[in-house]
Image 1 (cartoon, rainbow, N blue to C red):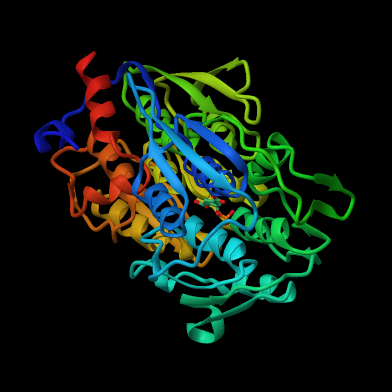
Image 2: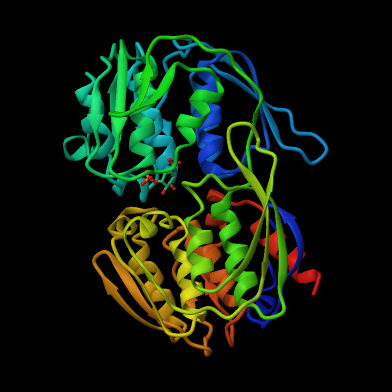
Length: 437
Ligand code: S3P
């Protein structure tokens, strides 16, 4: 990855031009996982070649699945030879999920229903993140999973076996937990039903339907019938709206900017960031495109515009958790106060994002108050450059890079490599847009 010149990062600039974002992270994980279980060859077009997704690819290779990179002429693609529901082989070593919570949580569901033993671990951050939320419901289906702290912390050791379909009502909304259960349900006997109080991202359900897996939205929740083979298909991955968020905020807060983001996924369970920015006064135009068959996509055009602070709570807060770090930068640029509440989940993301962002913003001279479940940010015109500790969190590094385009003086970011977790090429795209000014 080419690093931006540090001095460039701290000059006030504007962004102009059109870019295509890398593939959606959540959808790439699911496409790889489900294609390994389908029958025949799958082609995954526009996949995300980030470190998190590479962990999922490596895990399936370690279980005997052939995954070949068939990218050509600027189009990224993978060819996966599916082996059906029972085709995986026991991995010979520990599966390292790196920084990827999605890899660990979804794989645990899939591995619980295999006929072999497996162990999952991750980096220091992932080994501190809660796993009891998937282990408990999977145990209700008959899964045998051991881990530190009674199964709440990785490494997790999974003695795979036959699972029984069960109806599970989750007390909270989580796409990773819901998906772990549905993926376990794919292998379980009978019907598995899962419901949650709010609507988390529904990429797993959409991909189930697209691949012809026997599933249904029922009054009690989303249902899947286990043990039914399905055929692989070509899967197109839309651009990641969570990656688009960095450019939506950057172009909004940098005067004189106009940026077009092409082919972005606009699944309604992911567009909270558009709602929030528009409520803050952002100028974002959505041009819907024909759908990629399982996910809606659009080109987004964003122009710079002054923002105002707002209150973000309840379902709206839940819909922008991944975009919270860069929303903090939008809030710091807004007139007045922005308050985010009901977002305690931010404490257990790749870092404690409330603390990490509060420290970074204070370093920039922004007034911040933290709560157990959120933060209050007072917008300011004066930002000073600061030394920023990312805690190895990719979204903190990118958010502070965006902020550095508007600070007086440099933003010194301690770890830029972690950006590869979700967005290789981020700095190149940023340079491309700046080159057009
Ligand atoms: C993800 C679900 C979300 C999100 C995470 C990716 C997924 O977490 O924050 O980055 O791919 O399923 P929840 O499980 O809390 O919904």
